Image 1 (cartoon, helix red, strand yellow):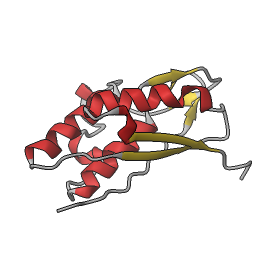
Image 2 (cartoon, one colour):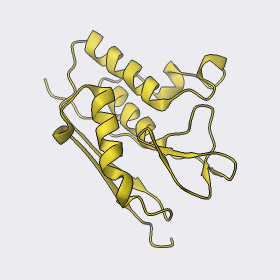
Image 3 (cartoon, helix red, strand yellow):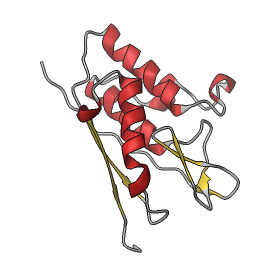
Image 4 (tube, one colour):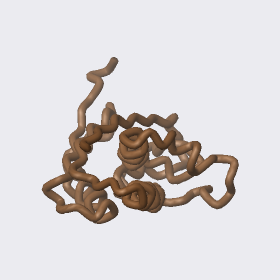
Amino acid sequence: MNRAGLGFDLHPAAPDRPLILGGVTVPAERGLDGHSDADVLSHAVAEAMLGALALGDLGHHFPDSDPRYRGVSSLRLLGEVLTLLTARGARLVNVDATVIAQSPRLGPWLPEMAKRLAETLRVDPDRVSVKAKSPEGL
């Protein structure tokens, strides 16, 4: 049986936090606020994986009320979600993700984001696509 999931995540901007996307720290004036490292790309991929098997959302598995997840790497959470999937006999086939951001421009960091996601998910790098789009000032 084949299943597909759709993930989405967003966090408010925070001037005193790093911008981490797909496990990559991107130079930026502001990062994102959140209980973990606020890596919206890794969160969205994890949400898609959980959704594909109807396993709830990240907040259900990793609640922000649990101090163990304060500042945790979202790649670690993504790895734990992969463990949940494989324990149920599921296999990740591919990932296609788009980050929507006005700034900074993400093009130079997209290949490294895809590489780190592929490593965490234990798939060939050619099975992970990460793209960036600008909301064009909307």
